[in-house]
Structure formats: C-alpha cells, structure tokens
Length: 126
Image 1: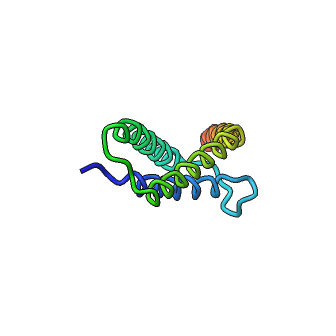
Image 2 (image 1 turned 135 degrees about the horizontal axis):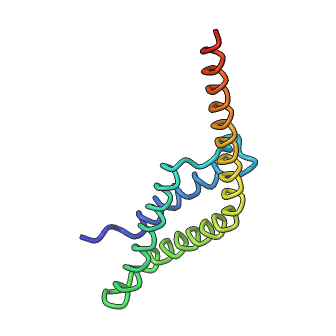
C-alpha cells in the first residue's frame, strides 16, 4: 500500500518548519546546522519529492480524491512550497554561518597545534 501523501507532506512540513526555526538568525536556538540535521533535512526533501512525483503519476491513473481531501492536500502542498521558498532564501545565511564556523574551527586547530608545539619544546628544555 502506498503511504498517504497527506501524512508524508505534513510530517515533512513539520520537520522543515522546525529546521527553519532553528536555523533562523534571530532564533534563540540559532546554531550552525549539524551534519545530522542536514542529512535529515535532505532525507525529508527527497521523501517529499518522491511523494510529489507519485502524486503526479497516480492522480492520472486513479480515481480523484474527494474534494475535502483534495483541498487539504492542496493546502499542505502550498505550505510545502512556502517552506521550500523560505529554505531557499535562508540558504545563503546558513552557508555563511557554516563557513564562519569552519574558519573558527580552523583557527582553533591552529591554536591547539601551536600550543602543543610550544609545550613539547618547553617540556624538552625543562
């Protein structure tokens, strides 16, 4: 049995909205996206894409949805589109924060290497 597209889109929209809220610059939880979060986001986007493709192929071969269900599905699809547009607008900021975090980590790594070299040189002198 094919999974319910409405449930899939609702789940994806919930997860996407939560991710957008976490990654928003003014958010209290404003943080750099972790690899796990980005993987989960990618998986959700792929799942929604597959769902949308299946809707396109099954709607032409199956009987139409009742009008209330079709309207609800259309609303969920509109929400998904809006979330995608928000994500697209947020990507440059997310990218910039990831680059800043990368630079911070590289600086910290250099500092640790310098401190380690200093400690080794001074340890031998003592």
